[in-house]
Length: 206
Image (cartoon, rainbow, N blue to C red):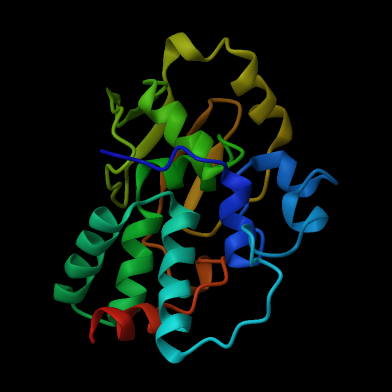
């Protein structure tokens, strides 16, 4: 699956807010938004009037960048969410939250979704005892996500065990065992990123 390989901070500047794509750097004084809080490019500091379509487009782009997806994959999630029962926008966010790379990040075993994707791709995690190296793998209620035995001696995972961050209500994390469990489906209240999902639905429903 193709992915964006350009500068992460450029994406934050384009959306005009922190997308927390660089982990700890986003909380430091090196953050690009704090240093240059305007869009990149020659006309980045110009004032622009945004249409309704522009607002919808920016919201979709922002959601894609939060979760590290390109258009084809994001559109596939929307189409799947549209066929599910319930509110399409909330279904979309739930599917995005259930991605393995996001679940690893939400459990506190990665400092960002980008790092979570990298760790999963490198084969550091198992799901229910089986190695899974596909970031887009959708976890289910009851799934146990654990750091692979051979990876537990890594300094990276020792740091996560010592940090012990707060996790959302839909997951539990045991830092001593370096594993977590999906205990329920994520709700809209569990998604703490600033996304107006109804604008994305309106855009794709044009």
